[in-house]
Image (cartoon, rainbow, N blue to C red):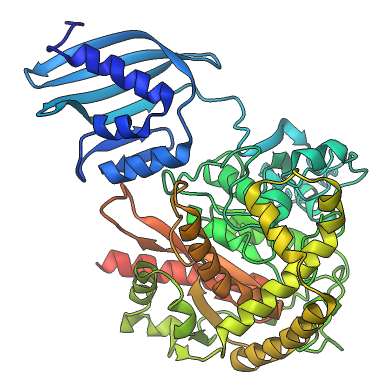
Amino acid sequence: MRTDGPAGLRDAVRAYEAALMADDLVALDAFFAPGPDTLRGDAAGLLVGHDSISAYRVGRGGAPARSIRSVIITPIDDDRALVVSVFAPRTGGRGQQTQLWRRAAAGWVIEVAHVSAPAPAVDSRVWRTVGTPLVAPLVTPLAAGAPAGPLRGARVAVKDLFDVAGHPVGAGVPQYLAESSPASAHAPAVAALLAAGAHVQGIARTDEFAYSIAGRNPHYGTPPNPAVVGGIPGGSSNGPASAVALGQADVGLGTDTGGSIRVPASYQGLWGLRTTHGAVDRTGLLPLAPSFDTVGWLTRDAATLRAAAMATLEPGAQRQADGERADAPADARPATRRARRSRSSETACQPALRFVVAPAVTALADPEVADAMSAAFATPADAGLFGHIEVVDLGDIEEAFEVFRTVQAAEAWATHGPWIEAHPGALGEDIAARFAWASSFDEKDVTSARRALVRVRARIDDVLGDRVLLVPSASSIAPSSGADAASNERTRAGTLRMTCIAGITGRPALSAPLVWVARDDLATPAPVGLCLVGPRFSDLALISAGEAIETMLAARAKRG
């Protein structure tokens, strides 16, 4: 085996390594062969095409420091060679890099690369703290022959907003974590999962104070998205979502105010349920905007999602709808009442249920997402499930978005403003700017927005009635972590205009991984969640509906 290689190649390998350690993006772009067929892979997945690799490199923010220990060059012919490098990361261990180099007119370039780095014991982008387990199940003696808990053995990633006994809440902000005291008891939403036989694997990351749907955290980094290499994970339940998608947890316990479960579920190909507002006890949960805050879960399959929902929605007094007006403000409903569960609610979303679509809402999505959504429901043979999908007009979506974000902002500032003012510089630039904007509303603005919110809620409820709205869970596939600020804001605004519908009405919303977007620059199709926004307290029925649609789409695929 030769280790010198064709002329000039070893010098090119050295120059590439220097550019990598200097994060010289221009030089690195030049080292990778241009065109759509260049490949780069690692444990996170495969990137296809020079432009995708370049965008990933921008979002990565530099490669981990390392030193090369050996290089073996195996020539294939005069113009191509396989280069295998063994490297030592500064953090320890050994890694391996395999590259296919080709001689081009301007010098040697890389056509294919694969990096195998030593896996960290704990990915601090995903987890704040973990255990084996961190918290054991609340096990009670079982009578002979009695069934085990429905979540027995399930690993739970708890969003860093919930009380976990013995641990402080950090809310994605290091200074807030440093000042927090350990919780004296589990939040009811945590305790319910433990009582069902699950254990807490760890406390997972969130965006700062959960005021984001992107999934970035300037203090701890961006958790990986295994479904879209180089894509953001979605937030603010980003840590639980990535833990589940990576196979490090089975249930992600999260929150959803403006899409914080639905968006990461959509971006990472997970099942995610935002529960009916007030259906799950929010005691022991650090709030953001109480009028819209809900508890929910992320899982890899519908069965686990149903088990988590039933474990949490069933215990205690059953919620009654008596006396609750459909047009009552969401924040006027008691947060500690439990969801009404009846046999009719579990079967309400079977094939007889009426589904509706709102073209003006779907049009907010990227064309590729809108086209994929339309294609999913275009086959007459599916009429047995869907019947006639009605088209509805939800009215002025822009007005709905504006009143939602105004009330959300006012409540977010009321919740966290005093702490933020007392701790200048504690937040990253993006979230600090969002809170600064939230502080700008006066009492007159907020009062007007709350009145408009009641009117908009009544209008949407009147249009939807007991029907289920089908809408994309997000306006796009997972954006690149290297996307610019203006692009990110457009994506965020488009998504919030869709996700605010459930927030305004207090309705449950299920994101099911049933729609996929194929592109030439993606090694595999990227997921987009199909969101089912149902009547209040149809939480479990929505899961059944999602499973029925999944079965329908699988049967269609089998038919070809």
